[in-house]
Image (cartoon, rainbow, N blue to C red; front, side, top):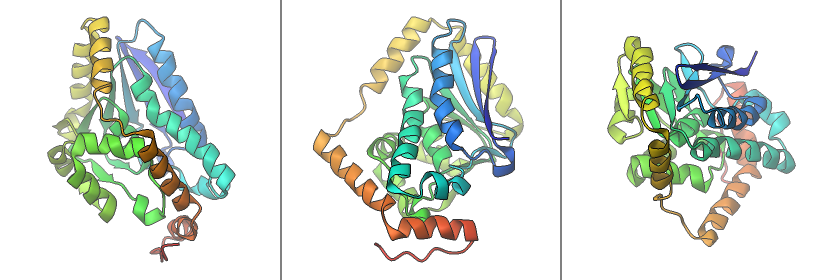
Length: 260
């Protein structure tokens, strides 16, 4: 059963992505539930820091559950509804006034990479496997998500992972600046708990003010640029290549893209 699991321990709120048979792929309901889970922790005075994690050690999030795409993203109207849900999910960590930490073990690709990027910090095990496969699926990727990756990794590294759609390991993710702290897999639980305990012991108003200030230092393009990016994304989702990308994924074959 695909679900979000939430729990609270010693000032730390946990949001666990649970869809283990699909490496914690995000269903539509999980996308919708994620902002609600973070908002609940944000409103809870006993919670000082929030951790996002995948269930088990095999995956953080393996992306969106593509088996739902034909139903939930097969038409322009369906794409708009689905994309609105994912957009809200991606914005949720920034809207939370408390620090949000991504605990990454194993697979972290596609939507999982995007979710982890939107968290304030990322602590990863050395078994991490990362990928942004949008170009293998014909997906358009929005301005805010790419802007965040550029802020974290720089233009060249972001171009590399998007243009190639290649896999890269945890050591390379750390080198590129995507991962803030890299630890042996056996030490991940302790490393995350110890770090979050430090945060939980600090003055919450100071931490909240710092988070707000840091977030508002990010570069914001003018609206015309953002609108043009969105129009290009819309073209991707309306294309035959997008249909071919999701069909090829389900059929486990190499997609044949035509650029239209």
